[in-house]
Each structure stands twice: as structure tokens, then as C-alpha cells.
Image 1 (tube, rainbow, N blue to C red):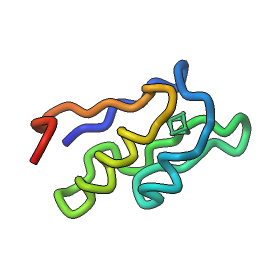
Image 2 (image 1 turned 60 degrees about the vertical axis):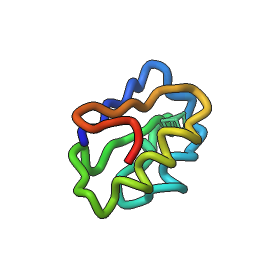
Image 3 (image 1 turned 90 degrees about the vertical axis):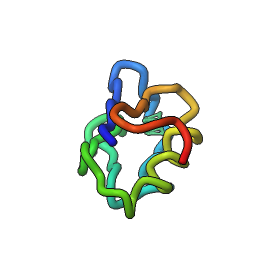
Image 4 (image 1 turned 135 degrees about the vertical axis):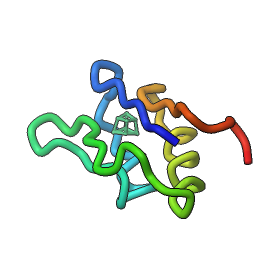
Length: 69
Ligand code: SF4
């Protein structure tokens, strides 16, 4: 699993950081997403998928893993 975060689309809603705080944080400058762990292990996969789903701007996407499972 590889996380791709498009900071140009991020609106700083912070849902990702709330949902998976070990993987996402927010910039102190403008609140946009900061990826703490771009290649999270399987133990974080469920939280990361939730974060991708709850992001209101579609700024987050995943590579290197099937969409489900
Ligand atoms: S949930 Fe989406 S829009 Fe909100 S801070 Fe995270 S990446 Fe940005």
C-alpha cells in the first residue's frame, strides 16, 4: 500500500488526520495534509482506507493494493 496525497486538492478538512492519526497529520501553516507514513503496513491498512473514503476533496489515493480486502 502506497499513499498518494495531492496537496493541491486538499482543503485541510483534517478528516484523514482524525481517522488515521498515525499516518496523516496537517500542516501547521495551511492545514493541508502531511503524510507521516507513505507506505503503512497491513496493520494500518483499514484505517488508511477509511481515511481515503472520508476525505471530502478526493485528495488521497492508494496504489499498490487492491481496492478491497
Ligand atoms: S481529509 Fe482530505 S481534504 Fe482533509 S486534510 Fe486530509 S487530505 Fe486534506
